[in-house]
Amino acid sequence: MRVFYKLLCLTIFSVIPIWSGVVLWSHRASILQREFLDLSLSYIEISILTHATILLIWTFLICGALEILRRGNFRSFSELRLIANSKHLLLGALAITPSHSTPTAYQVSPTLPLSTILTPAIGFSMLLNILQKRREQIRQRQLPQRFSEHQQAQMRTIIRFCENDATKISNADLLTETDIVQLANSVEAVNVLAEMETHPIDEWKVMVRLYGYPQVENNDGQIALFRKKRALELLAWLCVNRDRQRRTAARTALWDVSISDASFSTVVSDLRRTLAEIEGSTLRGEWLPTTYSDEIPLHHSVVTDFDVICHALDGFKKDNTRVGQLVQALSLIRDVPFAGTSYSWADYDGTTTRLVVVALEAAQTLAEWAMMHHEVEVADIAIKAGLRVMPGCEEFLQLHKSLLTLVRTSHLVTSD
Image (cartoon, rainbow, N blue to C red; front, top):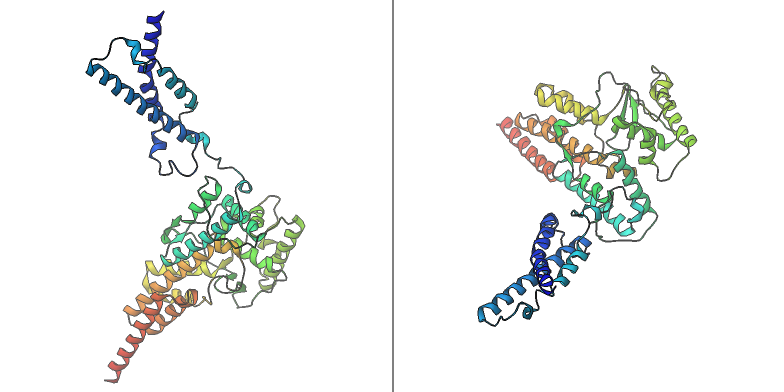
């Protein structure tokens, strides 16, 4: 019986390093993560540390046994008393080993409601972080991708939460693996300017002016007068979100609180009426056709000055003889996008950033071409358009300085 006990202890003593080594190998991905051993230890991290400690102790035991054998003090197997106690190490290894070899089971579900982790600190820090990234995208001329409908809903939840708390917060930790982190990561996603999708502008009847305070006008320059400000905002939102023209998406983006169907229908009705007043050739019901679904399609003859600028810029890049079209498009710029409004959805979802980046690209492209061909008036129009959409822009101030130098040089040459 005693021999069997010794053999069992020897077997256990041999299995311990193999078992701990297998556990550590199964968690190699977690060990290589930069977040490993952060401020909050997970059960996986405790398991890794425990098995690493077991391997270290086993190594010391082996070294001690070898030292005893080297000195010749070994007289009987039981005198080591080290292998016999190895069963305690095995029990510790079995107790701390998780049932799953991957750490994903301990991550927070991405569908976890924001209300469970959202605090004023996180909310304010999130909004500040988004605005800072939007400004950085403008400086780097990066065209941000639009938020998905789910991300728009999350954005509205954060804005609504922060508006209910006026506490001033500085920075907060945003390392929780939930929708809020995915939203923060999506802010940095960008598009190539050449891949920008715009609405075709052929045979347009109504233009929505987004550069400056939003206004709507027909081909004759007649400006629409809305009875409800939300109707104008809804029209602007529909124009820049043509692929998601749905009532639920619009209500989520524009309203901080849940509104009734009757209130939303009143806004839609005012929008139809106003468009029909300035453009009578299209029936009132055709501007926003009545549907029995969530869809709220906008008539194809409604365009924006943003669409006009994108179309003109694309045409000028393909054929620089179409310079007049781009000059006319840049003349539509009156001010920064959505000036004088409080459209929070436009600032956070990147709409304002996209409008600014495209306008700057168009103005700089035209200004550089005009300077190269000594077209002073064209360069002046382009530079002024760039400074309207982004006052104080160093690149356009430098272009303006170069234009003045060109004018003085041309004047001296003419005088001679």
